[in-house]
Length: 139
Image (cartoon, rainbow, N blue to C red; front, side):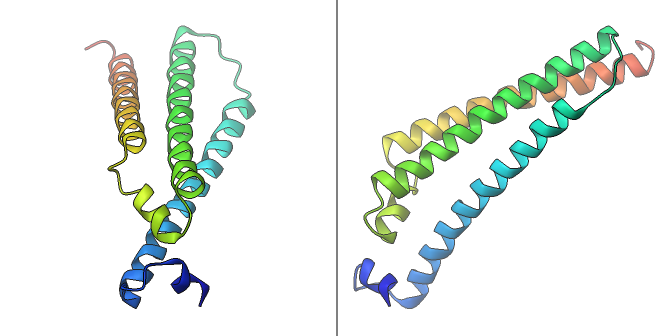
């Protein structure tokens, strides 16, 4: 098998299947995230509601900011996969090692994704609290 030739010879078949499953998981998750990112963009621009109240503008701004932050996260994950599969991916094992989280580039990407996730949670929770406050009559 060509997969076995690309890996060090001291790996068992269980370890090889684990490595391939992890790589498959990373690739499939980024493809699904990119697909849902595109569907979200389509849904945002497809909206035809013509309400010009301040509530709508605030919520549209919050959704737009969440979308921008999701785009940053998608870019960072895509760059991590590019680093692992293109820059470090001489074989399956090197791609797996490139994704393990110990390289400086992957650590930087994880830090950025964590900061983006924190800001996203702050925006989403703030908009939810504000929306509940306005629905319940400022009580």
